[in-house]
Length: 197
Image 1 (tube, one colour):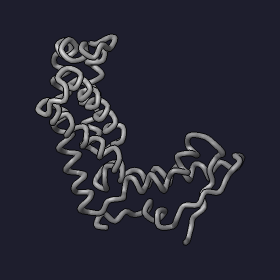
Image 2 (image 1 turned 60 degrees about the horizontal axis):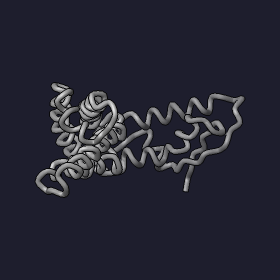
Image 3 (image 1 turned 120 degrees about the vertical axis):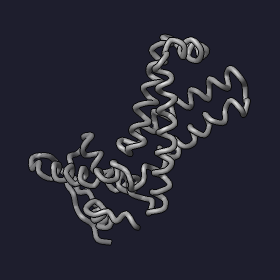
């Protein structure tokens, strides 16, 4: 198998990121055309619906804090009401755009996990109360684990960002270097992505 060699610094966050380049590219560009179309539809449906929930929380955060957050016995319920609302609004936009999708999906997943816990704590395993929360939780966890697909800003920006990172690491002649082998197939994917594959 043909490989390209990249130089990286011994152990810095940037060198760790460049050593994870093949896995990152595979995560962002893995699904083909139909899979990426399905992920786009999932991102749009979850993101658009969750924006509504976040705006609802931010419209009256005190009511949300007293009704939902206080039942979890968390300190500073008003603060966590704002955190939940902002997580849902910002996370939804990140998921919709496919920009920093893992962070957006993590924000939505965390909020929905807390909502599921709150519903189980107050109403037990009532399917009518849990079903919508579990659907949002499952969808956002799927996006977190599978990735945003090829029709996202993440997939479009990652190859160039990783190539620039590799160039930055190879431009430092004084750093102790280790050789990093990236399969030629993934390196070529960093240069040109075929969205119909």
